[in-house]
Length: 309
Image (cartoon, rainbow, N blue to C red; front, side, top):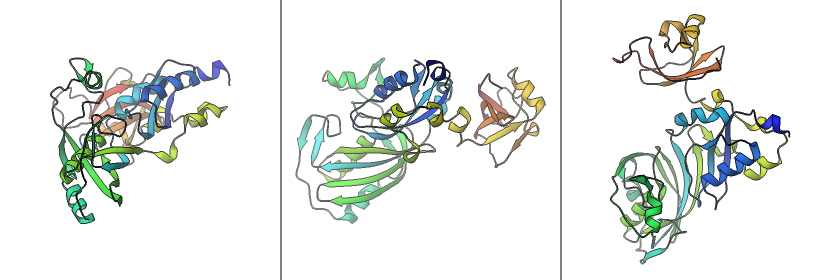
């Protein structure tokens, strides 16, 4: 592996993050492996958590904005009767309560309250900022500040295992959902509190844990390019829209295409995020917006144009 070979690599890397590391710890290690500073991650995982962490290399950082908005899936285990300041087992214990008797039906009824569109209060130990300062820094100073409830969606919440005071669930949810907060809320509904003991992200958008590499495996590879997704492959969840020659030429001047200048293999509707391709290569990201009032040229609203086409 030579310096010249690693310095020109661009794309998306799917990492299976180990416990005990921050997402930025992973970025630092990837920077050393790929010998480039241009590395970023697509969705923070707490140190306790493991699993899918998309990491962008080089020009791959240009598409992170489109990956951060995607849904996530988790498997989480939590312990009843304990409340901590971080809402997980790594925090300081604030309160210990006895666990009341409950049936699986009781637990299912409580879980059903959290399915669908809900409002969630972000934890103090989070990367959200107040006046430019991350909340976790304020929390470490013993401060608690007012936070706004956020709208999140829980598409699936399934009880996988329930043994005495330890419960495992699987969750499919929208971006910005805090599993620690969800578990704390479930514990409060049971009347005893709860804290997260294990969390694994099994999916991030279209990316599955089965596609991921550990950092240890990554360091053993002779050909790093073999495990990188191209920018186009990384955005595979968005429909591909092929441009004709006229539209491709106009795109270079920032002119969005007409629907009649494009070919789409799948049905798209107003508001869909799409990949605009020239000769099956990614040229731009756009939103199909034939009904928009602003900037009426073309039937697509350009979001980001890539210079490679």
